[in-house]
Image 1 (cartoon, one colour):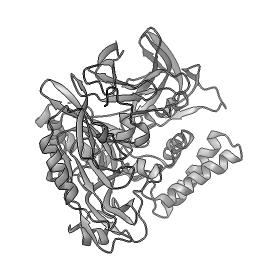
Image 2 (cartoon, helix red, strand yellow; image 1 turned 45 degrees about the vertical axis):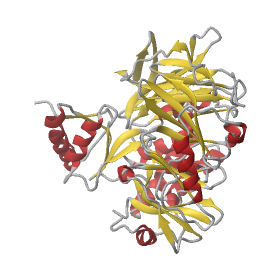
Image 3 (cartoon, rainbow over the protein chains, first blue to last red; image 1 turned 180 degrees about the horizontal axis):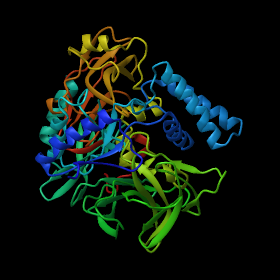
Image 4 (cartoon, one colour; image 1 turned 180 degrees about the vertical axis):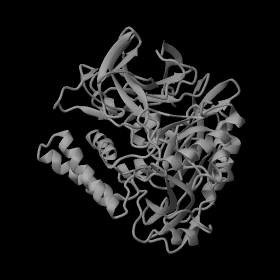
Length: 158
Length: 390
């Protein structure tokens, strides 16, 4: 039998998190006749560093992160690498090392570095369906799902 | 209180569509809103200090994207997949220019006047999936195909040359897309002299997840002009992320703690400390706003919002409409800092305006436009000339 959820290519979820996503999808489907799409799950430090390199090279100031001290440490690795004219690959490696060191200290620049964060497609849901989705998450997610706006998606925390 | 009374009297006495008099020239605290009325949409201007309101334009539907071109005193907007233009301040001057070349299901779109070319540009994101063959990812869109280099699970490396992507060669400095997010194409078009759309650039991207690049992959091709401004960026300006980027607030000074907010805001449990903090925005003189910020992938302003002074030892919660209590909010002040506009981050509706005095006091809204769409400030320097003004 087909699942009531799909994963975008490249998205990985830990087994227990996948079971919880399935539970939400199985509650959401009977109410809406629709499936859900997972757009992001658990990320590696290098995957996060690569994404942050892309943001910094586009002029982003990393102001969306709660832990601004950690964000500045990662930005410093980028700035130092650029100043030393290092290649992208080397700078991403340097940034990865910083993120890994932060993780060792229990600091996570993105919640997706821990296994419990999941992003779900939201644009294909009507307001009634969004209500059904919130209801389906009750008792399964750690807190109410957050309907992000830029870019639009649901952020779930388990 | 006097201002509130003045607004009530003024709004009570003036019918919609009243033309401004010379005494009612827009000031540094002017708002623009879009209000559905029957079969049409009224573009309303509110001058708070003068207590004036009038309609500046009437269109069939309310637009999602608007660009003002001050030099030509024109406004451009997309309504029902048609690009239209109107003379600012002439209520019935809207006319169609050209259709937009995409279907309804684009994930994001924006309109601006490019500073370098001086022409209207349209950007949009559309969901798609590449076909992977070996280490190549192939995209097809509107009769044209291009490739990138597939890496790892789902990363892609490419270089954009003359507006078109090609696979990155080994060792070449390339843009690399993250392995997460939903695959999309970012497309940028420019309106030519014969009202024909010409493609400026196209690129694969990722969207619909935190930390994805979205339209940023084409940032090198976008040069928003100084003499124009658009609705999307004005709406975004009041979000927590944008306020921080502009160094305008939504950052927690050491004394702005959840317990201070809890005490002043009269609320109970503020939520998971890992996802919630108290933040602050300076407004007028020594007065400012203390509020709650909720984190998912990005920060969001949420109630309570407290007007306070100095380090917020004392303060007064703003009376936010019940329907907005669980919404994520945008928070912005008029250029003179006297007024605070609060609206929904997601929809732009639910707008309320509060007047702040120099002691940091405010409670009830002086203006509520709860059913209006996209209520935004019109900065003094960006208010287009009003044709036909007395």
